Image (cartoon, rainbow, N blue to C red; front, side, top):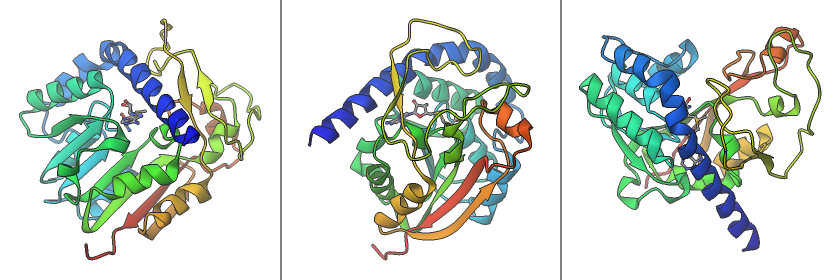
Amino acid sequence: MKELQTNNAYISANLIAWDEVAPIHARHNQAELLERICKPGFSALDETATAHLMRLGVYRKNVAQVCCNNGVELLSCKTLGAARCVGFDGAQGFVDQGKELTEAAGTDVEFVCCDAHEIPSEYHSGFDIVMITIGVLSWMPDIDRFFAEIAKLLAPDGVIFVYEQHSILVMFEPGQADDPVNWELSYFRDEAYIDESGLDYYGGESYDATPNASFSHKMSDIVMGGINSSLTLEYFEELPKHISNTWWNVEHSGIGLPMSFVIVFRNSKQN
Ligand SMILES: C[S@@+](CC[C@H](N)C(=O)[O-])C[C@H]1O[C@@H](n2cnc3c(N)ncnc32)[C@H](O)[C@@H]1O
């Protein structure tokens, strides 16, 4: 019980921290996005995500994105022909940016501001694809609880598509391409990582930031998170591809560490 209360406190603090940085991110990218989003064929998805979404049959499917930020990846699913698209994010500032981009694009992506662990039940069982991309899992204090919650969104035979940075990266101090690769934390660390320098990963702007708490999850915990939610592990691949906007030093080191991964879990239950 105490653990749940602590975890909920971390989640609440994180959502404040994310909402705080939303206008700062917008200053860096919203004007450019508003211009790009109106052009035919807009996509913020890389080749890997696009190929997997096509393979999973995104065309005419209902897609949810949990922790969707400003929704550019979900808007890209519309470009791939998705049907209903709903983005969930706990920071109102990003939800508002997503709505503005959707209006500019003249399309119909919906956004809901809520904690990923408290998605309203009206959305349960409604989606063929639930998408989790780059920079989400590390905000979740309890990975089993997270997967159990988002699994509720799946329609029968629906899939959770996870495309994330590799868990091993948190061991290393992030850096620019020429920086050395220094070992920093244990792969098996299970305490929260508290950061007070803010979340402006676009401009590196410093501001009076609310501390945020992030968590490292072993790859085996992520795999088991889906399995423990009675989902079927359908696909798992570790990739050398660097998809974060940190750890340029690891990418350029030539060490050959895995830098990202794709996991697909399927809801095989006939609910
Ligand atoms: C790094 S972004 C990743 C999103 C997306 N892949 C992107 O590149 O824009 C993380 C997002 O997760 C959201 N978030 C973090 N914790 C959350 C929670 N507990 N519930 C809902 N959203 C959350 C933040 O507001 C933020 O928009």
